[in-house]
Length: 91
Image (cartoon, rainbow, N blue to C red):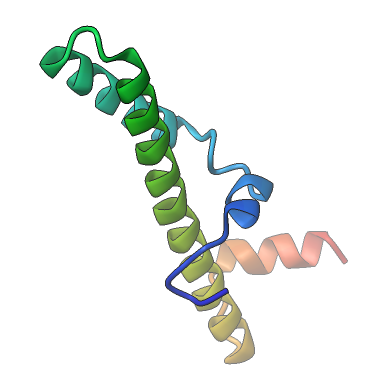
């Protein structure tokens, strides 16, 4: 799996496929398709699922990027204060 493409299993495993953001995007696309084609429920559903998946992939990439930054900062000894406090409480 490359950095630019996140697998479906990873997206599902991390729970971003059914996030609020992904659901909101899917709902918006579903409604938009039905406004243009009022009887195309199957097409609207397929478009909504594609939008949900695209949004989930984007969210996962964002979260992975945040984790990379934290890992780099941790290696350099520059973790944000909140992460340091969490780390101390887990020891």
